[in-house]
Length: 507
Image 1 (cartoon, helix red, strand yellow):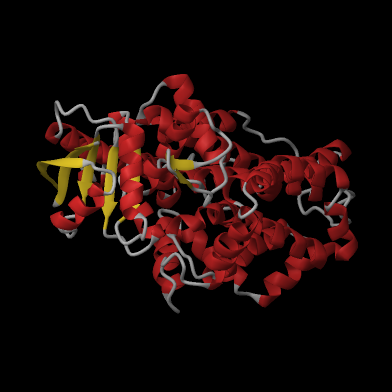
Image 2 (image 1 turned 30 degrees about the vertical axis):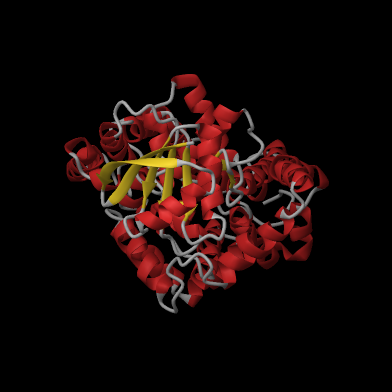
C-alpha cells in the first residue's frame, strides 16, 4: 500500500461491490432484528435498571455532569455516555422501555454498517457477509437488546478500527487522512463509554503497525490532530469531573483500573479458571450458527505458516487475529470477567469467519437461503419469549406493579431499599433500580451493614417525605425501629414483597 503506514494492502485496487443492493439488505436485516418486539419486555435487573435509573436521575435533577443512582448517591463506575444517550432518547420519545432501548437498536444497526465498510477491506467480494455473520450470531443478537455499556462500546470500537483500516489500506490519499481522524474519534467515544477497556483494540493496532511497518509506522498513528480529537472527546468529561471531585483520580486509577484487573474487588468470576467458565460458552455457543467458518479461522490461526504468510503480505487477516487475540488475553488475565465483555471481539470474529467462508458461502443456493430464513425466525421467536412471561422474576416492571399494588393509596414519594448486602457493589446488584421508570419515584439503595445506614435512611425520608421502606427480611424489626428513631420517623407495616418487609415511613 502507498498509504502513510508503509504497509501494503492485500486488497488494493478492489472494485466497488458488484451488488450495491446488498447494503440495503443489511440495513433491512438490522432493522428487522434490532427493532422487532422493541419494548416488549421490562427492564431486567440489575444492570438494565441501573443504567436507566441513572439516566432518569440526570433528567430529574438536570445534572448531566455527575452520574448518580439516587439523589443521595453518586456513581462514577462508568463514564456518562451511556446515560446520556438513554436520557436523550427518553427526552424525545418518553419514559418507556421502547425509548430506553432505542439507542441499542440503532447501535446494532450502525455496527452492521461499520462491518460492511470493514468487509470491503477484508472480504471485498462479499462485504455483506461479515455483517450478516455478526447480525445473526446468537450472542450478538441477544446482546443487542440488553441495556449496557457494551453495545455502545462495540460500535465505538468498530468506528475506531474502521478508521485504522481506512488509514492502513486506503482507497485514496484522502481516505487515509480521514481514517486516522475517524480512528481517534472512535477511541474517544469508546473511552467516554467505558474508560480504559475501550482502548484495547489500540494495542492490536500498535502491534500490527510495529510488525509490518516498524516503530515509525506506530509513530504515524499518533498524529497531533488525531490525539487532540481523542482528548477533546474522550477526556473532557474526566477532566471536568476530577476538577470538581479531586478524589476521583485515585478512584479511577485504584478501583476502576487496578481493582478490576488485578484484584477480586468486584467478585466477577475471578478464580483461576473463571475466564474459561465465562468466556468458553460465549465463544462456542455464541457463535452459532457460524461454527464452520469459526473452525476454519481457528485452524488457520493455529498454523505458523499462515502467520508468516500474513506478515509477509501485511494481510488484513493478521490484523484481525491480533484484534481478537490481544484483547482476549487481557480479558482472561483480568480478575473481573463477564460475558458481555467479549461482545466487541465478535467484530473481528465476524470478519474472520466471513473471510474463510466467502469462497463457499452462497445465498443464491436454495438450501442456504432456507436455513438462514429458518434461523431468523428462531431468533425472532427467542426475542419474543418475554411477551409470554419469560424473565418475570428479574423484570423490574413486574416487581414495580407488585409493589404498587401492595402500597396503593399510601401516597409514598420514594422507594428506600435496605439490604443485607455484603459490600457496596452488592447493594448495586440487589437494588431494583429500574422501578424508578415504572413508578416515577426516586429509588434509594442502602446497605444495612454501613455504619451510617440509619443516617442514610433518615436522610432519604427527610428529603423525599413519606417513603416506601423495603427492608430485608433478615433485619430485626426492633433494630429498624431504632434506626428510624434517630430522626423520629415512624414506620407502618404493609406486609411483604418477595420476602422483604414493606413499611410506609415518615417523619
